Structures are given as structure tokens and as C-alpha cells.
Image (cartoon, rainbow, N blue to C red; front, side):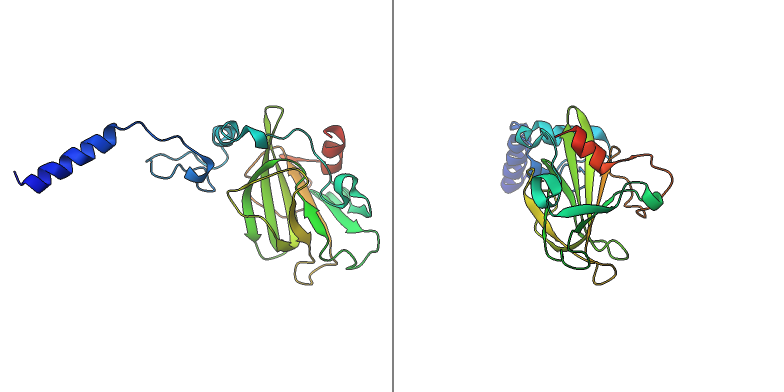
Length: 211
């Protein structure tokens, strides 16, 4: 057998016997696939996010604040509450009305992991989606119609960290933040309105009850 071929085989065998390296957050793609290993945890399975948070325990949520006027929404009002007109979230507007809040900061409501930070187009515009582990359960916060985005997918954020600015979806609406909180993570982005609230919870009620 060719000596160079034998040497190559030995190197491969030695490499395969080495202890597997510690898995970190950077080893996963945004859908929970472990890069370099031939298996995949399907998007939405709790075990994936639980594992990520267990390896990064400092980002487990310890409570929630409001996404504007931190921490108590000072200077803002809820212009369209959860289930008003079948709304699936809250619309946060500056008290000045119109586009007076265009460009104002948006903050992460709690510690979490960013799964989406991009333009989803249509009526959504720039959207950020953050997974939170809180008291042993997974939640998701969704921030829509953003002007600028300041965070990246596959990164962790802390409560109160600025993640974006308030936008108007390229002039489609007056500037405001559409905030949703979901207790079923990785759902389709949806339409923002529905009489079926399965997987969605009242954002204001949730934040008030978990400060």
C-alpha cells in the first residue's frame, strides 16, 4: 500500500478518536442544526432551545420590561391592545402621535436568543424575533415595523438592550411598534390579526405579571 495513503488513514483514525469538542452557541444555525454533525433538531422543538440556554445560563430570563420608554413605557401608550379588532399584539405609539416616535429606541423585553432579525416585507417590514426561557418555559417576543435593526440572528441579548428603532414600514403606517408575545415558539409569522389566539398571549398582561 502506498505510504502516503497509509499515513492519511492513520491521521483520520487519530482525529476520529479525539474527544469531541465542547458545543457552543456558534455551532448551531438559526434553526437548531448542529454544524458538523449529521443530525438536526427540527425548528420549534423545545429541546434545542433548552440546550442552548443551559449552555448560556446568563441569558435565561429573570423577568420582563416594556419594549419602549424603558422600563415602564414612559411617554408611550398602547394604541391597539391585544384582541382589540382581533389584534394579536399591542401597538405602542409615542404620546406625540403621528410619526413623532419614528426612530425611537426599541428594547428587548427580556434576556433571550435572536432567531430572526430581517425584513420580512409586506405589512411586517423589519422584524426581530427573540426566544426567552423563563421559569422553565419558552416564550417568544416579536417586534415588527422596525426602522433600523441593531442585533443579529443567532446572538443573545439582555433585557433592556436596544435592539432596533421604531419604524413605519416604509410609510405604510404611522410609526409604531407592533409587539407580540407567544407561548408557542417558532410559529409562522402570521397575519397580526385573528380571533384564534392559540399560541399568543396578552403582552401587557404578561409583562405586568412578570416584572
